[in-house]
Amino acid sequence: MYKATIGLEIHFESKTNSKMFCSCPNEENNSLEEKPNINACPVCAGHPGTLPVINKEAINKIIKTGLALNCKIAEHTKFDRKNYFYPDLPKGYQISQFDMPICFGGYLDVPLDDGSIKRVRITRIHMEEDTAKSYHTKDGTTLIDFNRSSVPLMELVTEPDIHTGEEAKRFAQEIQLILKYLDVSNADMEKGQMRCEVNISVNTEDDDELGTKVEIKNLNSFKTVEKSIEYETKRQIEALENKEKIIQETRGWDDNKELTFSQRSKEDAHEYRYFPEPDLPPLSISSEKIEAILSSLPELPNQKRDRYKNEYNLDHKTIEFFVRKVEVGIFFEKAVSELISWYKESNQIKEIADEKYFEIIKLCTNYITTDLQSILKSDPELKGIEDVFVFLNKKISPENFGEFICLIANKKITSKIAKTVLLEMYSKGKDPTQIIEDEGLSPITDDSELEKIIITVLEKNPKPVEDYKAGKQNSFAFLIGQIMSVSKGKANPQKAAELLKKVLEK
Ligand SMILES: [Zn+2]
Image (cartoon, rainbow, N blue to C red; front, side, top):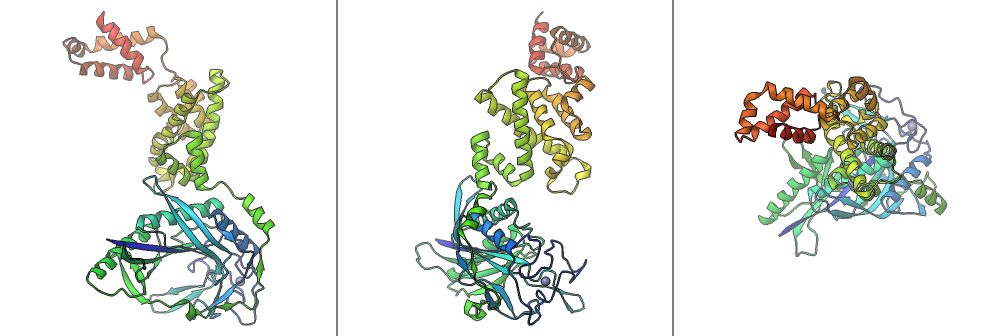
């Protein structure tokens, strides 16, 4: 049996006010088409004789990232020059870190879709600068834009703990989520703020030594990370079965043909001739600073998962939904806290009984993930927007939503009327109690009123009544449907069934 062994290298741009070694602004949207070379100075354009200065904010953010990923933080560290030539690197070297990365020895527990946990060890995260950007025009000219040059860049390297495309994809997604929780990077893969590279080798399961390592570059989505690994695993296994030699090389990914292709043979680290950056002093990081950053960390996705499980008893799928769509999770929590105090007040109880508590929470999550989602998705104004939930707060406040769930839980509205009320809340922004009052949507609680409706329905439908009496059960359901319709959804279906039976038996 063959086995793939995979390590990832992930680059992500840090979200800082200024660039890594100069005071130029670090702006998110700096495409050539709009305003090329507006954020550039002699330092980040690589003029000889200029001196870099370390960006403190970028250092704080990489420490924050390292701590969130269970890394150790170096007390003493330094920057190194990585020497190579490329037109987008006019200095002839990139300032990076070689043997003393700021963060090292960490790990991340990644929840997989089947509910299991995959631990991936993190070798290191180091700090470096991004390069400028080359644009190749149709007439064969290459233009260089320095807006991106020297933007702070973190590089994360994992141990070869990953074995499938799915694990790699989930790991990268989880890293992106953590970066967003930490607010250290926007990590948008389409914008190139996060870039993944895959190292992959294949060997037989009883082989102690790893196979020849192949690197796949230019993966610009999570899907391509997964697909390229699946393709490459298959390609290498086939080659080994045919007794072909795997070449150590860098391969690219062709998104249209969905395959990897050879780009160049891989260079080794010594070819970059790394040496300590003489223009920057070594860096010391105090334990006080590390402590301070550690205590300022926000709640992380895995902590939130545990809390959602313990506090709300949510299932795996719902937890993932709320953890990955951060705004919806916040909306849910606000709605629940509103809902619980409303529930206690309206039922005049001090503590809410356990079973009832989880029942109400479940009702709340169900309405968010089904009814609310379908309302948002069918709003023509939100057409084409992928994350429709971003617009939730603007349309319905969590307080009103909590109140709405409480009205259902307290049987102040039927589930049929609930749909109408929710739609009204969404389109008019009103609170649900007001809507029910204004439009007379309270359920029918008076039995004699309901009985009147039933008698009208029976008079209008003599045939189904006859059929029912002849033993046709379907006719009963039809009559209930008629009662619900005549009452405009305000009848309680169970109550209606009870009374209908009584009347029919008379
Ligand atoms: Zn600059």
